[in-house]
Image (cartoon, rainbow, N blue to C red; front, side):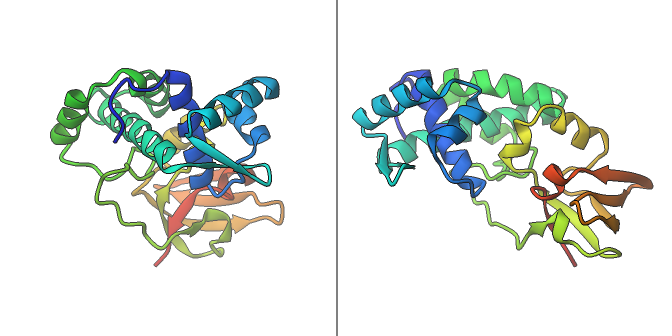
Length: 221
């Protein structure tokens, strides 16, 4: 893992973004980075040149890839972010949305000693509260499918809420409020051609919009 504080926070932010876009199976191009980070495309272009000069990324056919150096940096930042989210929700009782915002600050300032202490206190968690793997843990990916692909009448258990949904306005609050969170089980009661899925979850009927149903990962019996 890179030495703490070795890189500027902006470099960490971009490497983290590239890592998470790839993790969500999204083509990593400048436009996607601009959309995810809510910055202008000229700003992204300038930063990409800086990252390439630092040998943190490589470019091929307009697609952006992390180098081994960039991968190590990204993993260290993502690990701190997801550990912070787990601590803020499990130990301090913050909401998902609050924890996500706060963890975005912690990831740049958390020392290795604090990182190790949080992992120890939490018992070595393998995922963040949303089910995304914590780098450096003993995470084993379950055989998961998209919620949108579960047939009507079939049961499911929520496995993972990809990072793309964490950045969508209001989605984390919706998922937490409706208990559509990792570990909770339900049944698909209807599915529309538009991609909207209705599920029965803990006695409540929940309508999940296409953007979310196409991204929420679940396991089925």
